[in-house]
Structures are given as structure tokens and as C-alpha cells.
Image (cartoon, rainbow, N blue to C red; front, side):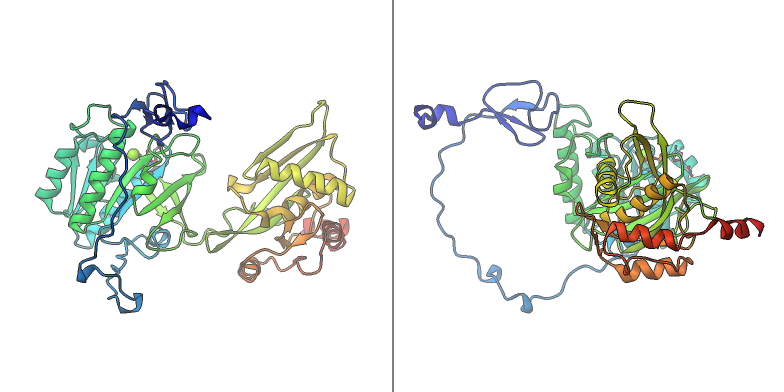
Length: 459
Ligand code: TYD
Ligand code: MG
């Protein structure tokens, strides 16, 4: 008690520059965000606070009814890349600071060069500042991806002040800075990429965007664990955060808006990396289905929602007798905890014992499914693999499976159904079954008999 009232004990004099965590003594590693070397002493305890007095607002700043405000919301300006505009909520807003995050090598520079080229082709002056690559490297990429536009200005700069100078000289209508971690300000003596540098660089660039009313696209690398390297606080500073992700092997890329002050955050843009740059994939349906339309045991198609777009995805499962004391559960594209739960539900609610089997579950194309709507398809694929009986080849299912074994409806059912029908998946069991047991019965009574399979094979 005595301690709490001691004023000396309440003032923590060390603070993490990354997350704001306070400590009473210096430590090498922040206990909150686990960053090394970010805890530093803050200047002497702040002066005691005095009660704040009300200040009368100036007449022109007095709060007004929302209905009386002029609509000066800046119009979205299409980037010319529909899949990117879809994520941005219609296009780029003048004065917006947009952060494009992603792992190194995922294709951020390639996409932004494409955005720059499209804008330049539409007669906007674009300044592309590369702080990572030399001019000749960027030029080489521009040649390869067809970005040779005379309104596209390239500069290789790592110094923040020089970048501001370039902006003054070129007076661009769009600025791209690649990347925030490799630019540094001489005002701060820490290294490029350190939290204080990143914050300084980002806030200067954001101020630049606001002052000139010019949109600015900033690249930020993320670490393996998905946090934007070092500067999580960047997410709070910018208007829009787009995350670029995908499987490096397949060439497919998705962009999601994690934050958007000018539009929804549930949209996803789909792209493909090709030898000559990044290409939009306007209709990704069919990419995540296997080629074979013949019934194969252990596979089931679901329709997931990627943003507001329905995306049919095939789930494949393999169940084999385990020789290990702890059977293996290997998943790719689906959460292993979700699969563990479905295995338990199958065992308790449908009498399908899998505790002595190795279970492998994967999505075709490695697409990541995180919504519970995929539950039913995962459960059916596992049951089908276990019994070695194929489900009907024109069956698509979606539904959440509860711990009680009930099937719960999911959102956007009519859009999912529409997309499944468009691709020829006309058989569904979502309305006729209320429990997993019932769903299994319906699925397997309509499942392809051996005779039908022979007929299919004959053709
Ligand atoms: P890049 O845009 O440099 O990634 P980031 O800026 O996110 O680090 O792209 C890196 C990868 O993309 C590289 O491994 C090669 C591949 N790539 C293509 O497949 N096609 C192309 O036209 C280009 C320019 C790159
Ligand atoms: Mg790059």
C-alpha cells in the first residue's frame, strides 16, 4: 500500500519505442512486443497535470449537424488495375497514404511498378522512388513488364530529405516509395529500418501526401510471423493497409485490405505472377479445383467467401492406419485446430473413429481457408477418405459444424450456391441435413456407386 502512494514508484522511466511498454529499469528486450534494443530512457517525469480548462471554439470550427456538411469526400481514382481497385474500395484517393505489406519476394515492387506504369500511361506524373534497387534494376524490370512510360520518373534514393527534394522537383500526382524500411532520415541517428527511423520516415511521407493532396504508396516488408517488420505502429498512421500474400511456388497472389479509411476491408484482389509481370485474375473460380472430374474418395468441394467473392475450393483428405503412438495430423491451407475439432466431432457424433489413423488434409492450390463455412467439406472429405467411398462429383457443400454435431448456416449462402451452380456443382446437401450424421447419410446415399464409376471410367 505504502508503495503505491510513493510517487517515485509510479513513474516508469523506460519506454519501448515500438509498442509503448513502460519499465522502471532498462532491459535489452521489450517484454511486450519482444523487440530487441527498443527500450530507452524517456526524459524526466512529465510535469504534474493541471486540470484542463474549456476553450470556446472559433465560430467556423463549431460542430455542425452532419447533414449540413458539404460532401468533399475525394473521389476514388481508378488505378487501372481492377483487382487492386477492388481492394482499395474503387481506386486511389488523393492524399491517401497506402501501405502495401508483404514478405520479401512476394511481388510488391512488381505490382507497384505496374500501378505506376498504368497511372503514367493515363497521363499522370508518377514518381517511383526505389530505396532497394538500383535504377538499372528497376529499368530492367520496367522493360520486362512493359512499363516504359515517359511520365514515369524513377529515382534511387535512400535519404528522406532527398526524396522530398525529388517530389518538389518532379511535382508528381502519385508517389511510390519502395520501401519504408530502407529509407532513413539524417535527423535520427538510428539505423534504417529501426522503429524510430520507420516512424519518422512514414510520418514525413504521410504529411507529404496530406500537404500536397497526392496519394502515396509505401512498401513495408513483413517478417515471417506476419507483423509489419518492426513498425506495427505504421498500421495506425496510414489510411489504408493492403497485405500481399500467396504461395511463392504457385505464382498466385492475393491482396487484402487490412484497414481502409475509404472503403470496405473485406475485398480480395487476385493476381498471378508471370514471366512478364503481374497479371490480374478476374475469375479465380476453378483455380482451386483439381482437374479430375471423376469421383475420387477423400475429396470434397466447398465454396468459400474471399471478401465478397465466392471461391470454390476443393479439399482433399487422406486417412491411413498409423504406426506411430501419436497419429500424425498434417494440414495445408486449413487450420490444424479446426481439423482436430472436426475429427473429434466425427468420432463422437458420427461414430467415425480416427484416433488410430494418420490424417492429412489439404486444399487444392494451397489456398488458405480460415472461415468455418469450410467445416462440412473438411468433415465429408475425411469421412470419404476413411471409408474410401467417393462423394458425388457434382457435390459442393458449405456449413459450419458445431461441437454438438449440428450444421449451422453460413453467410452469403445464395452467392455461394450461385457460384457452385455456375461451375456445375448442382448437388448440395446444406438444406436437407441438420446434423453431421445426417449429412454423411445423404452424401453417401447419393454417392457414386461402383457401377456408375465403371460407366464414368468407360467414357
Ligand atoms: P518483387 O516485386 O521484387 O518482390 P518484392 O518487392 O515483394 O520483394 O518480385 C520478386 C519475385 O517476383 C522474383 O522472385 C521474381 C518474380 N517476378 C516474376 O515472376 N515476374 C516478373 O515479371 C517479375 C518482375 C518478377
Ligand atoms: Mg521489392
